[in-house]
Length: 189
Image (cartoon, rainbow, N blue to C red; front, side, top):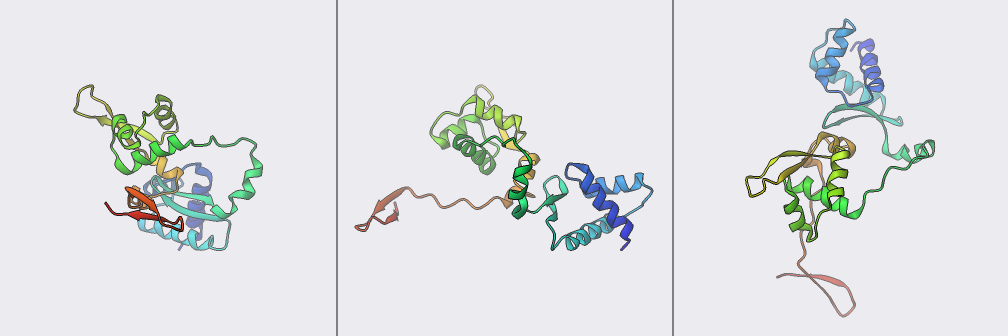
């Protein structure tokens, strides 16, 4: 494998500031006068993964492509570099994005039916501003409500490649009782 090509792919991932698809990497290499097959670029990415095994960096494939990032276990050390705090995600916002992620496409009414409370306009707006959700169409129903789906940016921010990488939902428990020792026991209905 050509070390110059591996290092060029590494430089592209390091300098891009966003995930790159293999086809994008090939186009960027061609601008540099390097002709490469997609399989050769994939080999370069595999070489970089091997190079970073004992490093604080890693090459990760996510929904939008490949990116070079700092391993999760080193993120606490970086938190001292930035004074600003990421905005916290409220429980309501977390419930809303979870419903959209697992049940998409859904309407605001669908979300309200599942949550049992109304969904604030601010929650939907916040998710749209973060680019975690998008309007993917309109339901053929009175009022033509918007259908919401998650975006690639949502998957990227969660370090996921596809929706099927989301954790499994636990089985719902309809009735919960406690025994004489105050232990919680799910009760079948």
